[in-house]
Amino acid sequence: MILVTGAAGFIGFHVARALLDEGRRVIGLDNLNAYYDPSLKQARLGILRANAGFEFIEADLADRAAIAQAFARHRFASVIHLAAQAGVRHSINEPNAYADANLEGFVNVLEGCRRNDCGHLLYASSSSVYGANTKLPYAVADRTDHPVSLYAATKKANELMAYSYSHLYRLPVTGLRFFTVYGPWGRPDMAIFLFTKAILEGTPIKLFNHGNMRRDFTYIDDVTRIISRLVDQIPREGEPGGGPPGRIYNVGNNHPEELGRVVDLLEKELGRTAVKDLLPMQMGDVLETFADVGDLMRDTGFRPQTSVEEGIRRFVAWYRDYYRI
Image (cartoon, rainbow, N blue to C red; front, side, top):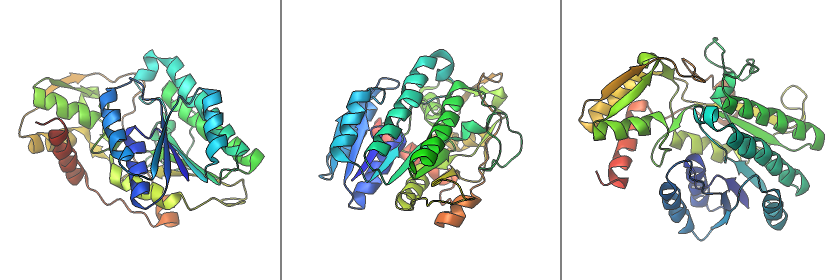
């Protein structure tokens, strides 16, 4: 049995659905908070609940007793930990939410794993851990000790916490540094979702640094394929480099896109012209992200399969269908 935390969230929903389609039993955990429209989370959850192999637990990661009880009851073979308080900009205004979910909540997950013989913990990190790095593409071995947002700092902390549990208790752990994941059922606070909504409504889209930014946009189906492969690839003692059973991978498209080009593609798909609000650089942001996925390709055979043109086409089709536009 596999636990997927954040199962009503964007990535968690897709991962849980993919695992269910493979015939696996999945328990999803989520607190269904109101960081964005809970009806979207409920709609995702409704799809998962239609599968007989799915069970749902509504709980907050920071609720130590509830998390301990869930782990003790089910003794999960594997845990895919995707729940977190997301958003770089939100962390500037609501720092305590990140301490609760991303730090205290992660300790509770680690404790649940080590006390109940979990065979493999996969957990979400973020490309934001590279912070002020200027060397591109970002490689897993690059320094990650200068985060430029609290969100990034909590994700770096997660990597260190996971390493310590792997070292102390020989818990197999795999960290996944996600690079700007997008696609159907995405988060409403992410750029492609925000831009689509604004273009259709005729309201301005905010382009920070006057739109002079590049992102390694990664389509959700590529992400779920990776996780489905990795869940059974349990790190072994001494790999790599003689350390504890732990790994970290970049999960990206290995091809950064100009933000202006993404807007152009959305305009083409939507048949409308964007109203652009050109703004200065925002606190906590970085100019460019670019993933070196060589380690991931070597170990899993993964290669990004979805171009940004195709990914945006699929997202817009979902958006029009879901919102009946």
